[in-house]
Image 1 (cartoon, helix red, strand yellow):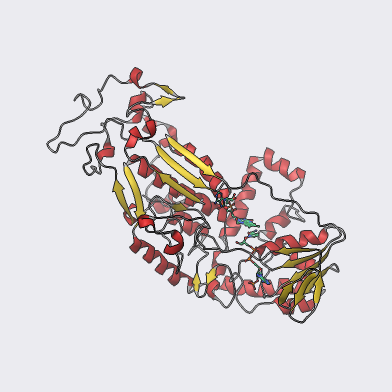
Image 2 (cartoon, rainbow, N blue to C red):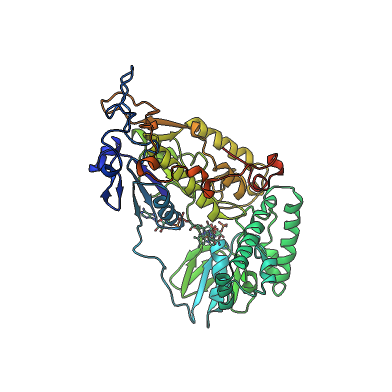
Length: 497
Ligand SMILES: Cc1cc2nc3c(=O)[nH]c(=O)nc-3n(C[C@H](O)[C@H](O)[C@H](O)COP(=O)(O)OP(=O)(O)OC[C@H]3O[C@@H](n4cnc5c(N)ncnc54)[C@H](O)[C@@H]3O)c2cc1C
Ligand SMILES: NC(=O)c1ccc[n+]([C@@H]2O[C@H](COP(=O)([O-])OP(=O)(O)OC[C@H]3O[C@@H](n4cnc5c(N)ncnc54)[C@H](OP(=O)(O)O)[C@@H]3O)[C@@H](O)[C@H]2O)c1
């Protein structure tokens, strides 16, 4: 998805909006009641004359000039933007485009069917155990590659909750709802558990080596009814090189009587079924292609940047980005879950939300500082690309496996670091990594880059409210004594600018 702010060319006057200093609350203009006519610019009749002839903009320093933001897609990322942008950005016209008419997908009837499932990626791992349970089904699983199947993440927590499946009982749901502390602890355990796994992605570490033997032992045990399957799929590469998905019930399904495991390559899909390279026809009624999709690819629609260059062309050789979320030559264009944005271990949704927060900071900067466009410096895109290539050299992701994370010896799918690393990296945007085009003055002269300082007033003063906001408990930060290393707050999260 993309969040693309499009800014009016001439500030507050654009799009027939009400003039500067008109304050609208619920559609009613309040400003005349609050502000003596043209009195804010330090008593100088609406504008301050300076030797340079610079005209002060008669708006408070927060500068909530109108902005338009377009979000493409109403998936997780789009929904996050749909919640956070209206919450944080005033005077913003937000449009979210979604190509689908609704959500929920399509349900198929699989009862009493012979079903072929191609693939052993995350989708197959999650689908197979469910299809197998449907009455009268007969499954043929076409698995051409070796793969690790991880024990379910958070298994110890699951055991402590007495969970025998990944479905929550009504009682557990009620407890989550009625007992916030219990729910908080549950969430904390899940997230901390995921974030504790990062070391497993670094080649040669104790955790990485330990995982390899533990996975092998676990798989062997779960496949003991058909040991030939273990021999067929046990990889030589490190776990995590291909995406690890918690696969509760997958290996158990493969050894069931209504499931056949097919290692031979598929040579053709025919009217009656799937033919494999050994000449055998596997007769089926339904074929499920859990075969993945293109990742790290430009969107199927055309996106044009500066000089009309499309992103398809820009990325012809490699999808390069700055911190996964923008690329050079494409002003005011941001991506969520772009190239190098996924994660090997840890929470992906936290990363999506933090990218969203970063983009919203950019939109606010554009709005507040009278910036027409921001474009990342191409040198920083090159730096990030070099960083990515160096980082992944020491990881399991470049071991000898096939995965959608990579193109040859380059990792294009993953963030170079942990989830927590990504969150920290995006916390305080490095504004110096961007090039900016400022709005011009009304008379066409280049804009004063500090024109956003406005008329010397703040919005609260205009509204005559919260005139000592810095004393309100929500903004009060008591000094931590004496050093950050000893302060609970800064131990939990170090201070950052
Ligand atoms: C089967 C499956 C299971 C997954 N399970 C997990 C999981 O357990 N945990 C996890 O963290 N992640 C999981 N993922 C990854 C998951 O895709 C992301 O976490 C999340 O859904 C990404 O959100 P998104 O908004 O970026 O993309 P999506 O949720 O895919 O949303 C994109 C939206 O954009 C719309 N769209 C696309 N093109 C256009 C267009 N041209 N115009 C308008 N609208 C458009 C689509 O219709 C869609 O609604 C899974 C992915 C798959 C495929
Ligand atoms: N819970 C989760 O996190 C979750 C769940 C489901 C999906 N997802 C995400 O959704 C995306 C897609 O997942 P996916 O499982 O559909 O794709 P995937 O992980 O790319 O796996 C595709 C599988 O199909 C096989 N395949 C592809 N073409 C084939 C062919 N012609 N013949 C035989 N086998 C073939 C691949 O084998 P090779 O490896 O040999 O190519 C691989 O086993 C991923 O991003 C995944 O992470 C996430």
